[in-house]
Length: 338
Image 1 (tube, rainbow, N blue to C red):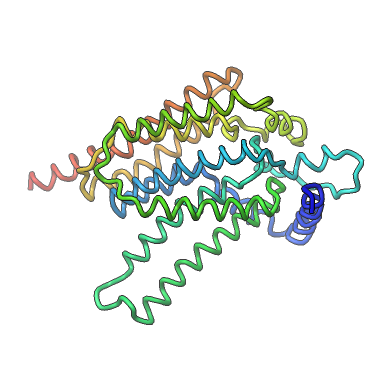
Image 2: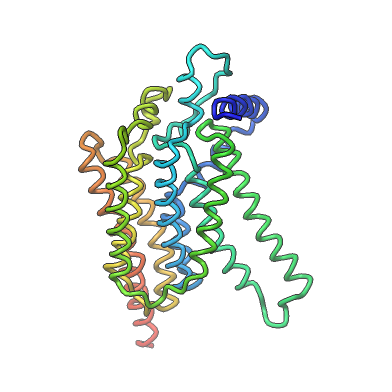
């Protein structure tokens, strides 16, 4: 079975889903938004520090590695997205697919970044959550086993909803979501097995540097590295739906920036109140970061990507250094004064 036949069959499946699930379109678009990789960085990451420093660091590395490896696979596989593949086929008899505000992503299609990053980071959080739910004398009990199964089942339903939503909005073919899911779970399992507390700053900075070096090397070696961006602009029904923060180069800046920020600010002595401050103020600053990226002028792409790197680095620096220190100082200081 050749690629054209797979794409054709998948296109008809997507069209059928759009026809049958139209009344649930709003919920599916919300599921796609929940699975956006940016929210693994901006919401799940600060919340994960509530469990422990180690959990937060593993989620940080899982998000950065899954996001970056996803990009590397996309550049290697050079797979298409449904919303541009169908019109590129010209007069071939294929159904016309509807587009949505989240449809017009600019990178190659496979594997799905939404599934890969969500699966990687979610696996770590669900695993630690199940461990924390295990109370003394409860391990092995029927209640705990059922509770654990419910947590994992909920995670599975979330991943299924994200995958279905990505297919529904015509930004991925089904096989791309499946590949992203498997790759993400593998990344999550590997990262979750590594003890990262105590890692020196140079490891984070080295990781950031390697991401930049490897990414730009592969970028320069490609004959036409911006081919997918050109197709997105050409076939997206609304030019306003094409955003620079979905481009491959912004992904590189986000991943390298987050590791650089952690490297400059890594702090292994945060208290509970410090982690609480990280969760609260991290989500607030993450929201501000998201809004700031959206209003940065995109006329000069070099400036856009450079600012993206700096803002993501500052955001993570706040998570690992500034907010834990501030929370511990303010609340810890009040307790001592009493």
